[in-house]
Length: 450
Image (cartoon, rainbow, N blue to C red; front, side, top):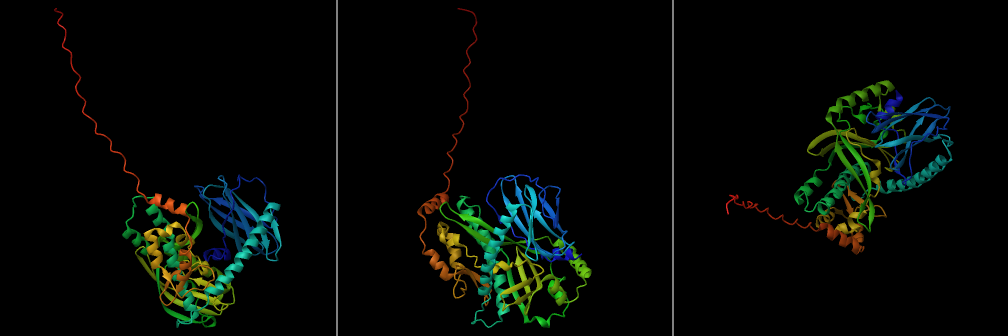
């Protein structure tokens, strides 16, 4: 039952990385990993799979590497983690989109030793771990900078961090629809959406109003009911947040545009989620915040911030209580928001380079959006960033970075291409009206007389 609780609380780590296009085919090579067994159950329509990995060794497994691929050459590696003890299992669900193989590539034990299915898997895992270490160091730097408080704002550090997270998610949800609006202007000529409708689409993204903050030492809430963290009476998973990272640009300049889209989930699932939480808590004997943290988020937590969230998305309003835990002066954060998944990765710069350094910036609509969404005096990172002002619950492009970006020259070929894309297609030539057919002349019948 403990494994069920781990799944419900989202404790497993899933990281997907796109690999180069390599020929892929169904693998017939048997797994050579002695310490783990993988079972895969495909959905009826073959668009999803449920994967269960069982630890059949006598050691604790720290990480599991699973590869998947399709007949079009796409391949990805997923990492499943969770301190799996001997005899324990861990599971993940996967949307497969036509994938034709799923392989257990390697396991890494808690003592650092590794077992893999072949030498190629060993090399691949080592490269993944090298990249992961580099990314981890970068993320630690982001967390340190993001946690630096603004001394001119008279509110606790923890409240500033919380407000920055929600404001940044709201701003990035706008960026998620900007490519669609650019396509509306450049591909759909004339545009399908009017300028007023485009502004309405931007404003219809998720917004948060935070209030009633309680901030203090973690020790003050350790003996409180576990419901302070999971809040079973709140809306459960109403706002789903999906990250997007894709190449975007014109022919001469392509950049990765990262955004987070917030979408509503069916309210009909609320009661089922509450009942599942209650079952999981009963099965583990959890009663206090300390019990819950020990299982779901072990760490050296020193501070907390509890607050009320009022969220609005696509005309629907919800209100509930949420809570953040903090360690290392705010550099480490754990989010307990029952209704909205708040990604920790929001503490990264996430600067939308392509929107201000490509020819797209000359689109009047995008130019007005950039002008409206600049903030000054909130820059924290050395690199270009989206920065936030917790006193106004706003995030935007750091004005210092925008000024530098706008001074960069544009590629003239991209500029000319954009002009061509903005030109309306020539109207089709009118089809000449069909002329009425004249009756054929009728010859007089011969009488046979001369």
